[in-house]
Length: 375
Image 1 (tube, rainbow, N blue to C red):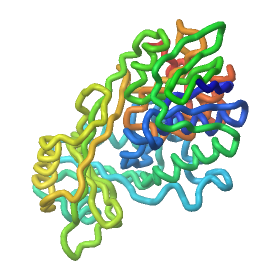
Image 2 (image 1 turned 30 degrees about the horizontal axis):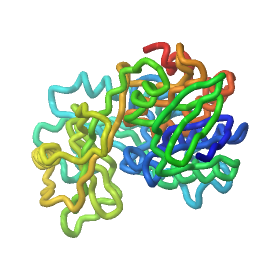
Image 3 (image 1 turned 45 degrees about the horizontal axis):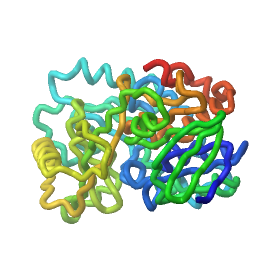
């Protein structure tokens, strides 16, 4: 059986593992182990990510804001075209929801200056398929942008490889043990050894943690379903913002020449190769057709992804409080893509026993609020 030595072993090549490898490989040899035949198969590769600074709990919002500079000005050679494309996000409300809409507007304005409060007429002008009956208005977040997820993910992996790291696909972890301060991670490729093990296994993070002898962090994978459908014939919807109702019971997002719809569901499931449920799709179609004039018809493509959360909804990044040399990078939920530039850099710093980098700390990112000990 072959043996490989490294300074760090990362389990999982999704956005969490890839972003950590990108930053960490500048300071040591990194091996990334991925159980699938391609990186990011389960969550990263199924994300319809939107860069939206108001989205998520407090630390997520701070990490997202701290990531904007990277998205707008990635390092030379990181990608061939911009990572962000203008989109905008519109959250609309019905009459009787004045207080909730005001509260949402206050939240958005706390992280962005480019915010508009729209009346019902302007809301319908921005999204002409919304039904005007009982419509109150909307909050429009102009800086929300589409993320090129593939370019971002591959940029992280490509940069890590340039720095000498190795990505091993089809490398399901069979056994993890720590001997004399060194982790032995066994796959069918052989034994991979390093003093530090980084658990970035997504929905399987608690499973990997148990193999390493750690207590559960309470990770709950949740299914999010989505589908593609055609816009009305003769209508160019490419410039519409992403739009959703105040209760976030559905959203619609332009995707190339199609529309992407979702019931915005978060259904607890076990970690597996998740597929969309027919009921999820039917619920989303009903909600979309009841609140808009869109006729969804038969979706051209349906899928689902796993978004994994801990109790407080924040990311988990830090050394296990009991098991030496085990670092958690889990609980990305639906925020892993938009936070990855800052989160990857923060976690790489913590792995080297350094504080949160100054340019990220100024946004209020707090290592203790991310660490697994809080759970």
